[in-house]
Length: 345
Image (cartoon, rainbow, N blue to C red; front, side):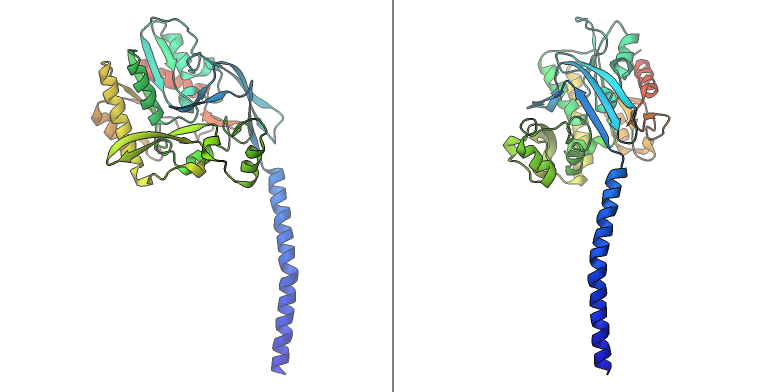
């Protein structure tokens, strides 16, 4: 009798499982579909497109021209539009085209470049407007790290150019960019000029492009359209190589080496600046937590960099452009410009 009851309960349990599993699967599918339908999708469109070209040294750079960019959210009718002009040397327009003036070079990421901003709202443009005796050059670019600045400075000095000032932005998460961390290279695909919408491995709407984004099957390394520099240590010596801009092809650099690599990058920047008798300026724009306790800041000060505290908590709605864009807004760029102008009086 007991064995019959056990068999009955076992059969009922199996029947219950057989009913519940498909129901739970169906419920999960419906929930995922609902999430996809209700999730806010953020897209950046660029006209004309493409805006970027591959570069063997820097990985990618902007194509000269004038662009209209729009940030669109799926839950809002309004868009955020802004205009960008790119000079012949791939730098962003700062309002002055005069040559033969003492130069101020500014290097950095999207904070310096001015993601989400019109040309006249960027820090570099505002500094140029106040200092007509200088030629302000915005070498910043979306996605760049400190190693990009080092590569750019080396090339500029090699070409016999001598600036009056050199300013480099510092944000603690630049160290991930410096080593081309897989999570960062992957993040470059989520929004912006290298996202699914704007990035194409070979050509527009290629089958290979679709296969990668739909099924995650990467192309051959030689078919990847854009690249990215990766800093690494070879027997303790800093080296930089260029790799395909695809997370599947990122050589491993240990995370624990991030700090040392970034130190060495800044040390080399300082030595390059010494060649043209310039003491470089550090624009400290952000560090996680108590920003003044960032150990990199102590290293930079000890090395001899001119330190400029230009910190603003851009996660605060007062300082960003959300819901469209989380980057520093025009008011913060005015603050950045004020701090840099004070440093070069």
